[in-house]
Length: 540
Ligand code: FAD
Ligand code: SIN
Image 1 (cartoon, protein in one colour):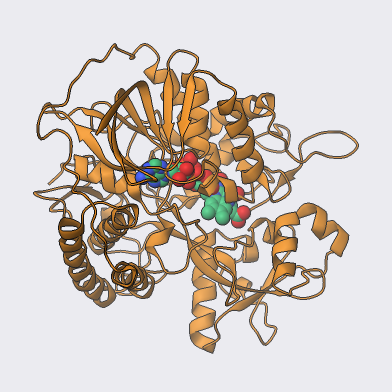
Image 2 (image 1 turned 30 degrees about the vertical axis):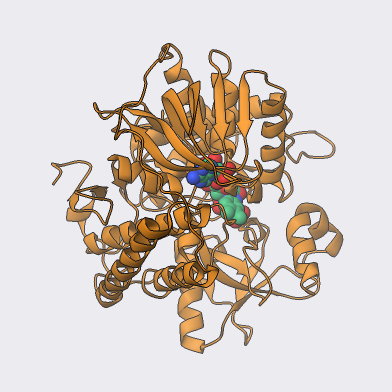
């Protein structure tokens, strides 16, 4: 088993990991590991853009802070939100300096600002609806030309290496060819993104299996607020369309939601109509579908001219056309799907976690910026602000590290044996269906109880398979899906109220006594959490 050392190890090549690497390369050698091709990330698929106050006449930091905190339903960390909002414009200027393009007004050259749900002002900088691709590709180019950054593809981090004092020293990773390497560093930055794949239907690409949360939990970090899973209201409904988001920015440009019999229903649920925060829109759609028994609702922007739509939403336009839908002439069939993991590894906005040597930034982390619900386009903003803060924090913390792991400090990796694909696929599908059916947009005590039972069985089967058949990438991802699912179920079961993204029919009201984060920490073994606590008060 090879040992590879670096000053700083970054796991993940989305916006958070790459922007961090660029910043940290100013003072350190940085190694970035990523599990598939480098561009495969949630970042790449971002459409709407980045929220930020770029027009100080019509907008203000105070308003952006207020909108963010209001969406967060009492659970935002004010300091983190303030840092995210106030530092946003400078970070966006840095991205522009790196070469990231944003849509601009043809005559004046000023940035075009989009509008999305929950934002009281237009403040979304975007590049058509290809914002994520533009950002990811530019950051990757900048990293590729930086001699102090080593980016390795097809490296799936399996477990963190933790020394006898509880300090994180790097990770164990499985390579594309099945070999295992140990990567050591004095500082390890988790930037592994989200966990949309724990649900049957998701806007996320295949890499989003919650690996960072699973690894951090197993290493003893605190995992916070996992019950708050954001479902995007509008993903394309088509039997062959997988993970195709229809950006909220369409509603920002006037698209309306209708039932199949043509009723515009959103105002019946919220006076803000189509621009209500997305949890409200997703629940409204869910309720319409449950009442009518239909499999989807319609999103209609056909009142806008085709040429304008093609220019403003090139991705959505072409994607829909691929499936035979001309959005300039007809409505788009849409359904909600799991989209964003608000909770994650408990961290400060500079990435600091409860574990020495471990930092968490971007979607894998819960920095307190989003509380119980994330405002659209605040996530890329948080990722870059957090990455820059983390890089500034680690400057001066780079030590010459000659740590040699002793027996027991490197997790044991059994050699893989062949396992029939059908066996893995079965549990993979089962886990994701349980989450979709029982731990989805609307929950109940009964559904959570059943989910816990079913996930317990799946977890047992998976650990038995893991012990018996050893490490393979598919096995590690399945293990992580089962673990993260069980943590979401635990968190959701602890929250006996409805708040933000967590809606439980048996507890439909918000309870002021529960204005706390939910924190899970590992007990004995790797299985579901055995200790719980709340951020503000005592734990356990
Ligand atoms: P990611 O970009 O997901 O990157 C994670 C990286 O970690 C990937 O490279 C992945 O391969 C790697 N990785 C994961 N596990 C491992 C492992 N075990 N070993 C090695 N590597 C690993 N947010 C906005 O603010 N605005 C938007 O317009 C917007 N639109 C979105 C549209 C879609 C379709 C989706 C899915 C999300 C959208 N979001 C948007 C959310 C936003 O894109 C993400 O929250 C953000 O990009 C997260 O960045 P990240 O760097 O933390 O993670
Ligand atoms: C979208 O474009 O609708 C996604 C925006 C986001 O998730 O922030």
